[in-house]
Amino acid sequence: MKANRAHPGCAELVGDAIRKAVAACGLPPDVFSLIQGANHDLNLRLVKHPHTRAAGFTGSLKGGRALFDAAAARPDPIPVYAEMGSVNPLFVLPGALRERGEAIAEGLKGSVTMGNGQFCTKPGVVMAFDDPAFDKFTEKLKGLMTQQAPGTLLHPGILKSYEEGLKSFGALSSVVAKSSTAPDRVKTQAEAAVFETEAATFLKEPRLREEVFGPATLLVRCGTRDELEKAARAMEGHLTATVHGTDADLREFAALISILEERVGRIVYNGFPTGVEVCASMNHGGPWPATTDGKFTSVGTGAILRFVRPISYQNLPDAALPQELRNKNVQKIWRLVDNKLTQDDLT
Image (spheres, rainbow, N blue to C red):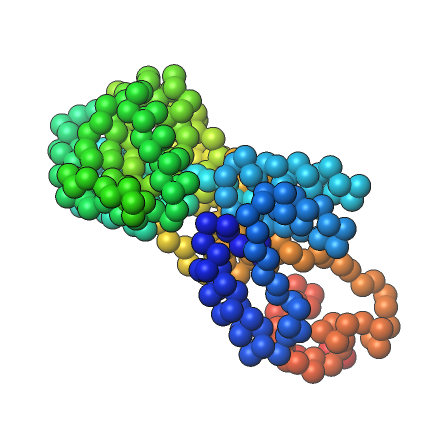
């Protein structure tokens, strides 16, 4: 594991916990190594090393693309599973907006500001129809975000990038709300912010469809269903998309779900995307540029598939097979035999 240069001490604490887990599980101690370094060249050297067979990365699009290109340029190319950011659009459909607009605003505020907006699944764009219900929703969200105290970001580099993002959004859209308390830059604090624009501007300005990493989100007012669907189609690949609606909304906007299936790795209904559960059904991946390979997840029980290679044994005698595949199931593990899961011995 290559530690993030911005918080080496935190990486050492995590690394120590992993080393203790390795020992407790009786694994070889060298199964895990932690490397510290501030030079980006170290990342490339690790990916190019002939003993490296696959790489995982979380960070910027620029950094992930550099590693991906370096791995592809090797004499023996290897996979790079990079997670590089996501806007995570959230759609509030008319029925849900009328029935529980204020509750959705409260949940949205919590999702946008959780961890001071430093979750890769933070909803960065909110789309809804321009009507009185959306006006009430906006007023509620404005009041909540104004009361949100500035929060500390991980390091000065993230704060700088966040402030540049606020500046670019401010030049292209209207500022709806910001934290009423001034942030303390010495503590790398960032103010929460909400911006607003029309669908036509959102479609015209690519910058509004890019991630701003921090406690900010953009409201997009759509005049028609066609505008809403065009805005959804204009989104690049993302980790998540969220839809708040009623049963009637889902029937009426079935085409929206079909669009989102092509754009994201996880569709959330009547909830919020921040937070992931380590389980078999979790998909924490998505189409480019959210990840370099949307067929894989970086969280969940399927995450290990990024770092294994399938191999088949055909017609080998029982004694020549790995212990896990022999007729006698000594370890009593679950095995798939003739498409049925079983722990039984084979005859």
